[in-house]
Every structure is written in structure tokens, then in C-alpha cells.
Length: 184
Image 1: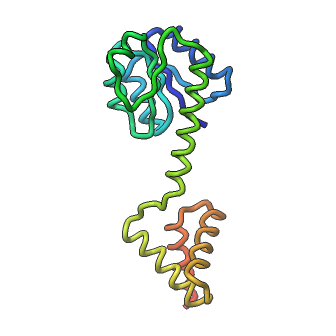
Image 2: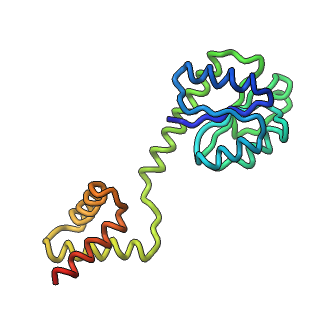
């Protein structure tokens, strides 16, 4: 599910666009009338799509784009004249007047791209503090020594226990260490 923030200066335009997106299957759509509201909302969500007009009540699109968190993509709705002036290259844009199917296709494309990026980020190993990684390594070492596991088996065991108990791997590793030390 992709978070979408619609930021247009006229509340009725923003609400109409939100309702159109809701009717077409996008369930997480919020509305703002100022860039500051959109930035605040984006900071709370961490990732998604901002659909913006060229000019809000308090800033232009490029200022809004500059202040968005890294997990957000921007779709700019602007007149053909503004688009021909030359816009930033790292955002999507649609010319006004807006064609509904173009909007839906573009939002769908951006949503799929955001989902792919999210999956890639989740598949990357997490950066852990040295002391956290040391706890995981110590737990694996203890499991390997006492239970004759390979490192991979010990890692999977900690992962599975972590998922089963709804704790993170570091907490699970610390529990394994504590239990092993109690049994000595």
C-alpha cells in the first residue's frame, strides 16, 4: 500500500483528486493545502507519493520537493507552459488540464516503483551497531558449540525464535545467551 499525499491550494480540488484515487483502489490518501502540511505529513509516513500543483499557498513545487524525505516521489500537476519552462528532472509530471486515465496510469506506475524499492530495501541486510552484531555472533557461537549447529543453522534458529516471539534478532540473541549461561 502506497501512501499518497495530495497537496493543492484549493481544498475542493484536493478533495476531488483524493476521492478519485480512493474510488480507484488507493486507500491511503491524505489532503493538504500547504507545502508545510505536506512535509509534516510526509515526515510521519516516511515513504510514498506526493501529488502536487505547481504553486501552493506557502511555496512552489521545487521547495516542497527539496524538503520531502528520501522515500517520497513527486508527481507534479502543472500547465503545459510551466512544463516547457523546464522542470526538475527527478520528478514525474502531468500537464493540466488533467486526463483522469493519465493520472491513474502514472500513479499506478509510481506506486509499483515504490513497492519495488521497498522490497529491495527490505532485502538488504540491516546495519547493526557493533555491540548488537557481537551479541548475535556470541549467540550463534554458543548454539554452534552446544547444539552442533552450523553457523547458518544457528542464524536461522535465532531468526525463527525472533519471529515466533515477536522480538528483534538482537533481543533474541541476548535471551539465548542468558539461557545458555544459566544452564552452565
